[in-house]
Length: 118
Image (cartoon, rainbow, N blue to C red; front, side, top):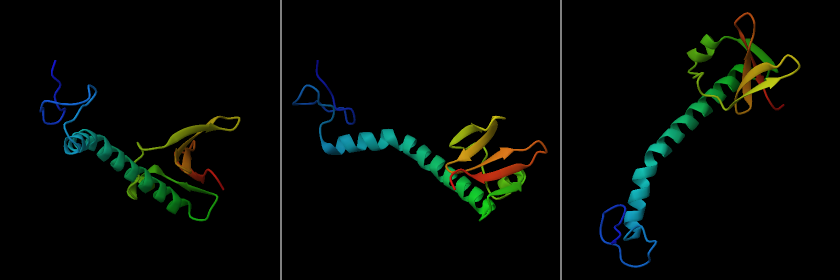
């Protein structure tokens, strides 16, 4: 059975495990097939960086700060984008983190913003 280049469909000559007829076809194939994933990764990374900067700005030089989700969202915070969630302490309070800045929901509906590593 004759093998064909994955990009241009030309007949392949040479090694039995060869997938592309030349470097240009290989690069074009990978550029097209990885571009959607790369775009998504760049977009998500940009959002996470922006979310982290907002939390950092709100916290400033304080140890903790009270605020609301509405205030964060007013600054452009996107609540769906977090790096991790951690339960802390005997009460197992949930903290929502964007890298090293995070917050927890209080009973009165406010948020307490913290820095994970001081």
